[in-house]
Image 1 (cartoon, one colour):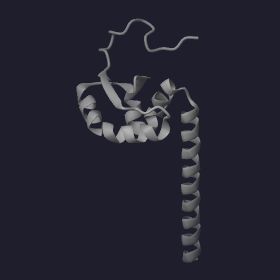
Image 2 (cartoon, helix red, strand yellow):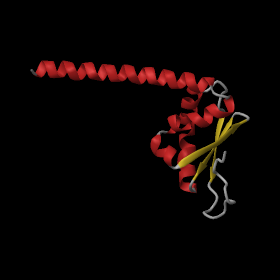
Image 3 (cartoon, one colour):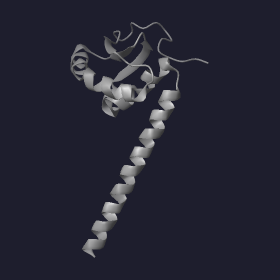
Image 4 (cartoon, rainbow, N blue to C red):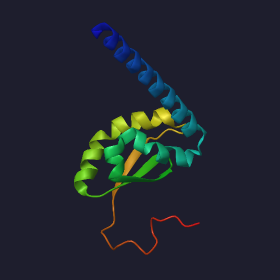
Length: 121
């Protein structure tokens, strides 16, 4: 019985790994098909991971520079140290190379004009 459980566990693990590879290929293909100005912005959460993505916001991508808004100087410093790692991941997903990530501080609360940062249609 133990060997059967081990086999089933191993089989499920392989299937999950294969699904993960397939999903990554699908995401990579979709990002490469996106407009170059959008692809790096859309790829940011994949590059930095969900915990960092919740506390940052990719703003735009122009002239090979991805601008990312961060909450404070501490986060900015930490993320700048990780920028080479993020660049490597971003460039796996984008057609136009990301040469640099510029981390900018969020404006203080209440400093944004009404409606800034929201999308209206």
